[in-house]
Amino acid sequence: MPPAPHASRRTFLGLTATVPLALSGALTLGAGTARAADSAYVMGCFTESPSGNGTDYGLHLAVSTDALNWTPLNQNNPVVTPTEGAGGLRDPFILRKQDGTFIVLATDLKGTDWSYVSQYVHVWNSADLRTFTGYHRLKLHDMNTHSWAPEAYWDAGRGQYGIIYSAVNDSGHNVIMVNYTTDFVTASAPQVFFDPGYDVIDGDLAVGVNGVNYLYFKSSSAQALVGARSTSLTPGSFTAFSTGVAHGGTEAPILVKSQASGTWWLWGDTYTPNGVFYAWQSSSLSAGTWTAVDQRTYTQPVNSKHATIQPITTAEYNNLLAKWGAPAWNRLKSYNYPARYVRHSDYVGRIDEYPFDPYQDSQWKLVPGLADSTGVSFQSVNYPTRYLRHSDYQLRLDVGDGTSTFAQDATFYRTAGLADASWSSFRSYNYPTRYIRHSNYVLRIDPVSTATEQQDATFRVGY
Image 1 (cartoon, rainbow, N blue to C red):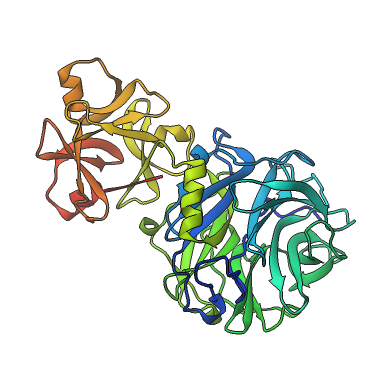
Image 2: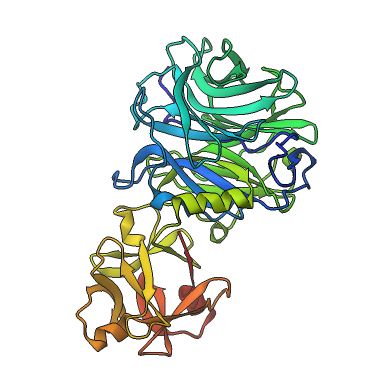
């Protein structure tokens, strides 16, 4: 049977109730209320963009303090890349092992050649996600099929780790398989973990939540993310129960438990080559119902695809930033069109819907104002001699000519967002009654008075 229309991703965020004491404050996510004394999150992904401008099949990392807005590390470049098999990865997964260190798994596939068959998955060990050791591939089966979207979990009853992944077995359709291991070097023979009788990929587990285990997966027939549950981790014991959620064709579910509240998030990824993440939330996994999260609330790392999210401590968050560094650029999200970002196109300032190429058109260095260092100027990343400036009240990307007029036109004062004080607005230096806003998606400076104009003039400065 031909593979499903993409390769997949994996992530496990239902930690077991036994989290290593190396964490400051044990996380007992099964209880649904406890949190670490200090907490953050790490995301692993690979990258793809519409024309391949931002495509890379290595492991990319990002960090967050709220599991919703992310800071890409290493300037959004890979931190490690496979050297065996296809020479690239998809669908990375990060697990904190019982000893407090990490294991990284990934699909052995580079690009979108779904006819490429690998019975292996990539494996790295890592003490801290700053160094990666022991790279190897682990063979999971001898079948003439793929090993997509690997994920691992601790099965306390067996005293082993389970590795689940998508493959086509004798049923003729994609099912979720499982192998067991203690060391991620050798593994048991494969078994069918979940087969509802139709094509399923991208299994993602939350283990031990009030005595119940939850498995979310992509139903290829429904083109939606669906949940199954079981009171055990026995292969074949899971039964589908939830209402499916989707935004177009959606795959790659990520279950994320807030470390600060009882909220669960379910992330999903559209399966087009230029994937877009969407998020839903719930206060109870047992209910099996989800509410879409306002896109103003979350921002995926640029070009990210098929991610994994793992809780970490604040110390680990700080250490990752110290090692890999935060981006030297920012992106600006529109408040009232949160799928759109400030960019230049043919040197015209505008807001366009993510994703697009060149993606660098939406990356800006917010430098001290050219006319007043207490203000800001927007320097283009891919045209570093050019700055956003107004001309006849419209914003253009022009080369700095060294004149005081240009410096004034290119200088703005950052203020509290006119529609939301936690966001930002930008007031013109030389026309102080006017703010940067969008009108028909084109950027200009205008006086602002109505609620709509205030929303047009409000942006989130992030990554």
